[in-house]
Length: 285
Image 1 (cartoon, rainbow, N blue to C red):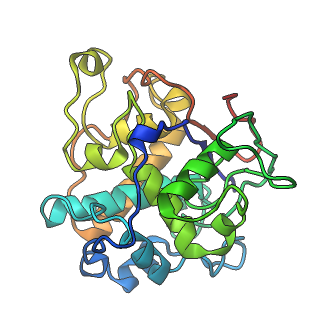
Image 2: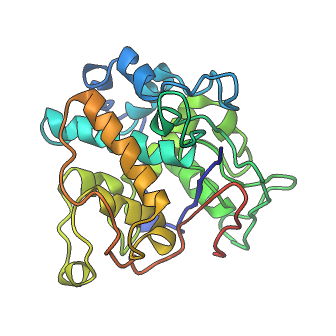
């Protein structure tokens, strides 16, 4: 079993997605994915061997989604379901507890982990988001939020002081899901948001096209971890992300769309987003 994570790119103030509690909530997630389907998708997340047992609940996911009015509300029903499938697939890869011969297959073991297995401080010098005394900013939650400046910016966006209370991402399931959806909805120049890619709102530039970057699920993998996984031909990590996605699309009764991999895509201009295995070191930031 292994836990993958994300060292999120430093997002400028102009691209931060603000979550306004006064804004009407998001769409009816329950009308797109029922609790029974959610439990089938993340079938073994509450297995006795999973450290996150009991944490990632359906109600927490629905509550967090309501704070982001555009999440899973863009396009027709198939597009909305596809966004949910893509979101849960990418985050399942980051938190997987699966292995090749796992019961019900490796893609039934998403959301098994809650925290990075080999945590460090991940404290970088930043005058705007200085590290709080005694706090560590290792990967937590569905997207494995990492580094002090990301906790600071994400906390500002969702209205919670995560810089001083990073453990909230691992103790409050609604906040935990919100950090992942915040990352999903937030563009990181020159990268588009994952949301814009999966909903077809992203139009690849000439430079993107010449680099092989085309719209589709594979571009989301490039956004999240292109520096380590994309443009290298077939590899197990990309295949794992695709495996989760296909299973979830099948459960939701929707097509996969085109361009699922990033095997021939050059990474975006920044390589600061780094996924890592439980035993591997992160890219320096």
